[in-house]
Image (cartoon, rainbow, N blue to C red; front, side, top):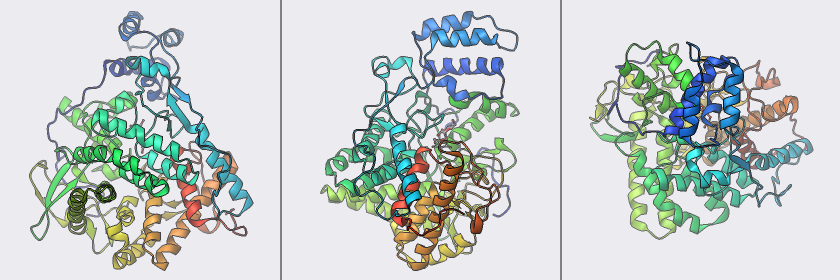
Length: 569
Ligand SMILES: OC[C@H]1O[C@H](O[C@H]2O[C@H](CO)[C@@H](O)[C@H](O)[C@H]2O)[C@H](O)[C@@H](O)[C@@H]1O
């Protein structure tokens, strides 16, 4: 459907409306502190996440008692000096429990670093990007390990790389691009340490959490762990890593195929397909954004509507695309988020990747029956892609929206329920071998990508909707474009290679310009007029952020930068 509103009941696909993974008493208490801080300090520079990241100095009971004794005004506020005094006395600073870590495999210029980058300025910049791994490397403090109940930070066994800025902990899908960049930097140990942490989360919680915080235990993020392991194995041949990962990966596969994430759909030919969706085990405000979520929910009239909305919000966070009109029935109304009613193309592409990677790992470790089993699962999913997602007219794969609330029962496929809006995710299947190796599919997809409107000044945008949401135009900085680029290259088609190169050139150039003009770690940079790329304030590459560093280094490795190639637009 091309209309911007997507049909269906507002309660599509709720299983058990009460399905919730309880959070800890510390998280609930810190949400109260967050609420008081907002009432006291006001909205202007308020970051709710800061408050749920505060480590306790004393035990929770004592802290809570002291907090309850503070005299509040009717709206719940405190005098600012009282609040600040309380926070200073009872808490360490947000992030004090995440300490710098000196990566043992970091050297200033690794041997064989980016041989194809000859341009002296670009090379110097690439080395600076490389040096950021040092700035972004962390481990948990010893206090987190000895007194875990005082921290929302989870006690991970190894070091990790954080995205940066307000994100002071390791994130699931960010780690994929971080690891790709670390491999370019020849930092194999650092890359493996990240995977060790993610595996430990599966061992503890049954899945990889959104991020390593107590308030992220109700959801995951796009499942890219098997791809991280695949890339490390490809670079190092570390078969021991593969062996120790396999049980965890199979556990993660079960998580994504459990009742909450699994959906069935009967196609136009009467064949039944099993696919997956995002679904958070949560129906309350996200603790790290509690005050914001509550403000949105305030217009909803009853508790069950609010709970439903909160689950859709948390499920959008599970998608990594928080937030985008992609998940909204009405793009102008945030409370119409309906993430759990969508069967997303990209999620299913990642799970297809997981099936193929598990099959590959089983094969290299000599477990042929597991390999065969997962190849069969991948084959079924490939068929589902063709029947459920593929749109022959648009020549791309489209998200599918449920029509009714009974996603436990198989639904019958209806062409009108494909979402005809264009998103970068519509092209992510190109990253997968069954699709990039099919030259007629790739040929068609290249044509539709070129005319999609997604190709912009900084590469591929995430969406075309100018909604003000983080993952929509003009803010959509798209790490996903790296996957699309890789698929285009792997297709072996000349046209694919030149389109990939063009996308990479745009991403690298605009990131470089942003760096030159405002340095690293700006939250937003307005690329104004970028010569033949166009521009006009459309895109804001986040130079210096963990995953954008990874994308820059990986694209530079693939495409290089000749001495005589212009870098200024
Ligand atoms: O605090 C709000 C949200 O922040 C995270 O999401 C965003 O940052 C992540 C880290 O870079 C990134 O993985 C994600 O795609 C971004 O949208 C967090 O993951 C969310 O769960 C959280 O609600």
